[in-house]
Each structure stands twice: as C-alpha cells, then as structure tokens.
Length: 426
Image 1: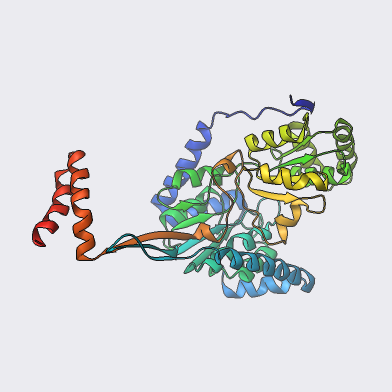
Image 2: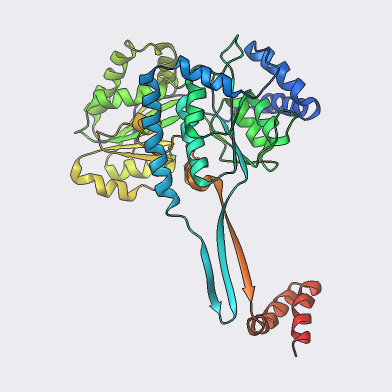
C-alpha cells in the first residue's frame, strides 16, 4: 500500500471552456484576417511591430555574431549527438517490398516523409533553443522537404532570441518566422499571405498553444497534446537524496505546474530528499517558480516494494522516468516498466542530460499520454504507406472471397467490382 510522505495538490480537469473559446476566436481571426491578425497579436502580446514575419538570412547571420564561440560549440556538440541518434533511429525504419501472402498477390509499404512541418519553439520565460535542435534535426534526418520553425520574439523587440535563431539554423531549418502563440498554430495550419501552411506541427507550448494544436488537428497533423512537464523517480535506499533533489528541482523550475515525484521503498531516503529539496531551493535563481511547483505538485511516496513502485509508475505513465536502484535490481525494474516518455537508468543518468545533449528527444508525452504514444522521433515525420499488386491468377484466387464478403455486408457495388474481373477473365 502506497504511503504519502509529501502530498501534492490533486490535478483536476478544470473548466476549459474559456480557454477553448479564446483560442477558437484567435484561430478564426487568423483564418479571416491572415497576416494582419498575426501582426496585431505580435504587437499586443510581445510589443513587436515587425512587418515581415519571416526572419531573413541577414538576421540569422547577425544572431551568430551575438552568440559566443563557446555557446556555438556547445550547440553544435549537442546537435551532433541528437543527429547521430536520429540517424540510428531512421536505420530501424524501412520499406517492405513484395511480401506475398498467397501466390500472385504482392504487398508492401513505403516509408515516406511528410512534405512539410513546423517546429514550434517556445520563447516565453526562457530561450528554449534546445527545443529547436530536438525538433528540426529529426525532421531533417527523416527527409522532410520543407522544414519551418516559429518562435515568439523577445518582448519589446522585433527579434527572436539569438541562441534560438542559431540553433534553428544549426538544425537545418529552412524557414524561420517571428510569431508564437495560438495564432502561430493557426497560421501554419491554414496559411496566410506570408506563411504557407504545413502538413504537421510539432513542439511544446503553453496552454494556448496546446489548445490550438488540439483544435487545428485534422487540418494539420500534430505530434501530441502535451501538458506541464513531469518526472517520476523510482529509488531505493542506496540512492543519493541530494542527486534526486536536484533532478526534482530541475523539473520544478520549468513552470509553476510542473511535477516532480518520487516513489521510494526507503522512508529515510524520502525524508532526506524532502530536506535536500528545501536546502537546494535556496540556491536557485528560479526559486520563485520552482518553490511554487514543488509545494503544489511535488510528491514523495513510500512503496512497500520495488514491484509496487513499478506498478505505480506504469499506471502514472510519466513523461520522464528515472530508475535509481541497486545494480542487482536495475534490470528487473527496467524490464517491468512499460509506460513512459523517456527512461533514465541509474544514478549517473540525469534527466537533464536528455533535455539537452545526450541525443534522445526531449519533446515527450505528458499527463498519462505515454500509455499510448512515445515522444518525437524521426518516425514522427514519416508515413508508412502500403501498396499492393496482383497477377491475373492472384486476382482470380481472391476475387470470389472478396465478393462473398461484400455481399455479406450488403455492399453489392463492392462485390461487383470483384465479380466483373472474374467475368472478364473467363
């Protein structure tokens, strides 16, 4: 039976009707008024008065001049790891040619990249330039023909943060636009004079961006609908409480609704983690946000066994899942886990390594969505499209079966399409 050592608020499905209505009005305005609506929102929300929404090559080059050589090398090093892993992932996805379930029937599939995509890179509280790498690089490796990106400007200016622009360029993004929010999702879904619509939109965002993705889905493809960031740590008595506390706070500083959660089999460890969190909070520049998040949504739970901890994690299906247990228990625990966005194994493996530079993607499902989907990867941008071809003999062997099945459903037109081929080949 799970025991609560440090409780959290219960996340409820709040009334989202106002959000839905607000976002719907924004989308409708963009559909009707196009670029004028985008400029209006840029001015209203960010104090930006750009006329040309697309960022020019000159602006990108100017951004490089504002980024230190050390920062540029760091961005390129992270990009190299992300690209290497994306290429390795692509190697696991292949076509299927001429599989034959019966003589004369040939089936297969082709793996085809989407024609175009938009990478939404948040730019609110922090310049999340790492997200530009996480979205643009797998799209490029997948072979997407037209890769666009958008991000809000630095408030009160006409410019996207220079590190974000440089990261977008390093990622291989073809077109960059200075626009954000729900209005950006609408623009890339429906198109405006300055922005040609895309086939797919990927990337995280605030509640307005998330709701816009939900409402535009169908007109455009999306990765998934994501909520506040979260990490769940499974730990036993050998884990270092200070290390776990640091990982929880790294998650908590994302925003006030982020969630850090520990499920441990050792009560003393749980108490020590809580003390370590309180101590480390005092050292953070982001204390105000992290403290609110930890107070409201941080949680420490005591499980009677690792099996119970695993059961809890599988039911919770967290975005990030850390396993910090004794070495002789590690393989068993990992092998029992099924539902997570990304897994971090062992005390050496910080979740933040995946956030930035190890190579796996940090755009991951939240709020239980890991029960049915993984995160963004090369395959997000690929379609598996089937084909079939039949010889005369193959057609004659399957047509009677199809005609019978069609008649059974009362679809005589379907049956006729099979029967006419039999008649013409007597």
